[in-house]
Image 1 (cartoon, rainbow, N blue to C red):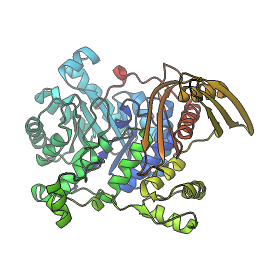
Image 2 (tube, one colour):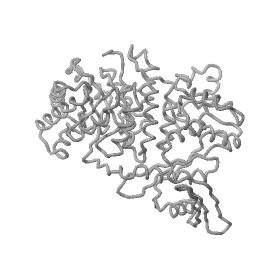
Image 3 (spheres, rainbow, N blue to C red):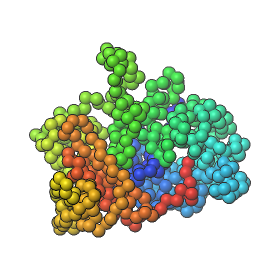
Image 4 (cartoon, rainbow, N blue to C red):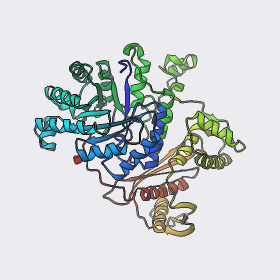
Length: 519
């Protein structure tokens, strides 16, 4: 292995999906995986194959689409998990199984109820069995941040001998300080002595995930596990974009260390994932936040106008952000020009997706004076992650006279027929959703409702995201809707959640965090 290369292991589709409300359907996961490959990610952890039939199906389909990046599935140190992982990634040109077991005293005693010797035997058996499916096996020591160093060395040596090529040291609860991470990694790198790659997976509970990951690299780790936008359960994980840009901007500090990430795909990847998950980066988020290149102070503005490098340590174009991103296309623009623009934005839609997106673009161009790149990204993302539309919105009429009861009339197409009904509610949105419930026969409980302006101006596209549960024993479903009219976007988002639920029905399974574990 090139010791100057830092392997970027992206777990947005696995650990990132554990963010509350970030569940994705299969088509959305495939779209994210192909974008991660375009970004240049070395390893894509596509999911946890044993968690549910839906996860298995998504990993299997991603394995068939991704050719350049390694496709990985997580698996507990159990034969059934490892078998599911091996079968799910079998069609990928590059495959990895990532197996793990807890190694901290508190986890071994109270969660696993196993002795240290039993844990080592289980780990060795897991790695040995995983090697019957793939050559590339990664082993993680869950809760390594609170594990005994002597025991970690013992289990690491045993699993390397069994065939693990990567050893991951996760700070599962995000408790370590940078100097503690550095000391531990330096000692483990010395212990491993080149027999395997040392990896780190830092959680952000104290806001130190990126700092801890960079310190680990400084001390000899050569793989960083991270997520786009820092997604992940609790406070999230190390943010891919921050790790990568820190290594690039401070190359003088890190010497020859580098990644193979195409940084111009960072912003498009961030926007795609924010759109699909409905989780926007905080405005002041480093690298990809809305305010990352905003200068309000007069002194800063004066400096930037004279030379951007006075207050910007890298150019927005380096991450694929064009601050002058007005699309010079209109209603008279042809399909070829539109396709060319999509290619420049990093999209490669199928002919069907292109035709559908182009029609929606033409409709938008009739109504909107200026169209921005983010408008196009939203339209195309919507088309490329579209699931089969069991129910499709045909018409929506709202009635809310002064002092009256909010009501809505909705027409929906289903199995070649149009069904119209009307209903009342406590508010306009409630009336729309209740009417849709009655027409479809699926009654959802709204958990979250968000409206975001896609671009700027009074005529901006509204992007509505809803999080809905149709069964309290199953994960919440996310739906998206785009329109210049917020109410239309809301109705489309709710129907999108219903369609997504129907596409996943029968595959949904409760994820038990106690039995599933995490790294």
